[in-house]
Image (tube, rainbow, N blue to C red; front, side):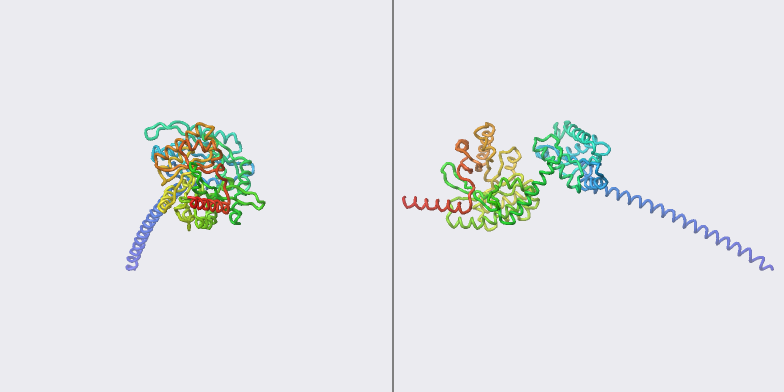
Length: 492
């Protein structure tokens, strides 16, 4: 009994001690678990914050803190998905008038500063239900989710133009800007976010064409016109693929001597009813740069055998074929060898390449590289539309040029408007100062030819001298010239 009396308390004490130890272990384990839970919650919060930051970066423009292209399209897609027949959305497409000149004159730093100011000004006037973003460059989009009241949309657009016109200081200079805005209201059946932005962009270009610093609205009439032009372009592409678009040649002359010195390769669409569509009319149909590139490629392919035959016949010394490069080019056309491929199999020394400022917007560096290489192989490079404002003339500093060309609009008004005569005179003097030649297109009358000669421009092309003719007619002309030269040689 003594043993039992002694052992039982000891056992109870041991059990009690074990219980205390277990409870302590459990408490420590619980504390560790709590700390682990807190740590996990902290990490989750940090991860969520990091994800939020990444999502913000992915959807926002770092310069202006507005939505970027991805963010604005994503928002517009959601708005369209939740819209109803009676609920309309407005897209305002805004850009800065003559933004490039600000960058060129004040530098890209000042341009970035201006874009930041624009971002702040947009936020300062936007209603709560509007979302704004920057597509890139100086292009901004404002989405008004409730555009049932068109007067309200117009008021927002006018507030934007007003606040943007307020002067600001850039690089120590006081600058006043203006903006143009295109407005599209939708969606109509099946309109996508990209299409609504595209419609607003069409309206923006109409605002630019109408003189800038204005607002234009995309209407049902414009939509019908776009559909008509799209149908025309489809027809043109089918005609190109079917071989119905062929090269014609318009001779070019030295107006002093009356001698032919070249011929411009032009496209003509011979329709099934026998009518002929000119290159100018086709250019108005070809909205897409890839259509223009395809047109140029096909015309040059068809011109190669003609050029070889004419060379065999005996072209006059120094004769060159003038080739119009596409008025607009896809971004990679200059760098992927596409432009250079037009002239495969043709001696470059027989070519004058007419290039337009609009063709080089996508890649001025690539364009300059291709044109430099072609010049090194013997081709001449001519800047077209050089008299239409300072933008084209600024290309004289950026491109390897041999010639500038007076466009037909200035030639048309040469004898009736003193301002056009002054522009041509300035172009002639500039060409002389730069050591390059000058030519004129669209010479239709003797008075125009005399005025050009008086100003010092002697290379003429136009209906006064010859219309565009078929390849066989040009061959006949070259044969006659060769025969006349032979006769003159015998008589001498």
